[in-house]
Length: 320
Image (tube, rainbow, N blue to C red):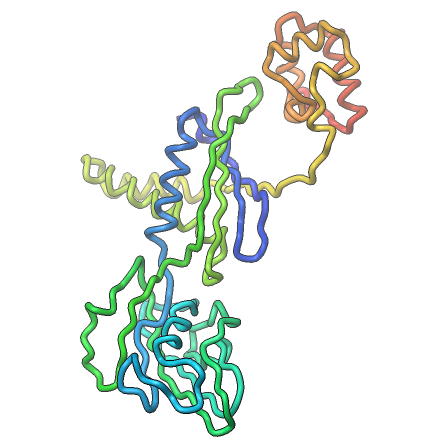
């Protein structure tokens, strides 16, 4: 579809683990189609890492208490479920906690293997209440997708307590569809999608990964319908070699909201612009000379009048 060739992703906001992105322009109706697909994939199909099992010195089961530790083991387990990791391989990793003396034990105190990073270092795991207290733990960290129930894990190793784990790195996704324009095409969609992650992946990485998964599934459907795998791979290669233009949101300018009706130009020029679907000064930022001359009743006099007005606001229109 020709309209898909000009899609841009604009960064509206990126603050910490939250990112807001505008995907446009899209043909009418495709905003909901694309937005809902990306939203479902973000929630269900991205890989994350978490604690799937623990061994605790002096504890035989998850209902144990530990001398000198304020929290019981059940509470400590709930705290550990909030800790997220970045892991650079598919293999299970073994991390450790070895804390002694009075103080607070945080996720930043976890001793990690090579290739493992704690993405949520500020989470409190336990509070040691006296100088003789100690908390010695061995954590099994694994990567996965979705939710894994601890009830399906055999306790093969003595003292190992399996934990259920929600691997999903996405905290929240919100999506809305707005109307946008391209030149004189006014009946187009823009998807606004906001992504909040747990810190183990950036919002931008999460959105990109979800788009890759969507592409992969579309390719599998094509193969199932008789298109050769080689042709599908060639199509994917063509997409991957296209340079993606990333547009950073411009600083807000109040002049963009000035209505055409309120501009200091002739009634004839206003009528021509309004008939062409231009409602505000901001709508004219991407207009060309040819766009203006194609408007009904718009001649050189109206063109010169509008060009002069736009120059006053620092907008220089293109000749083609």
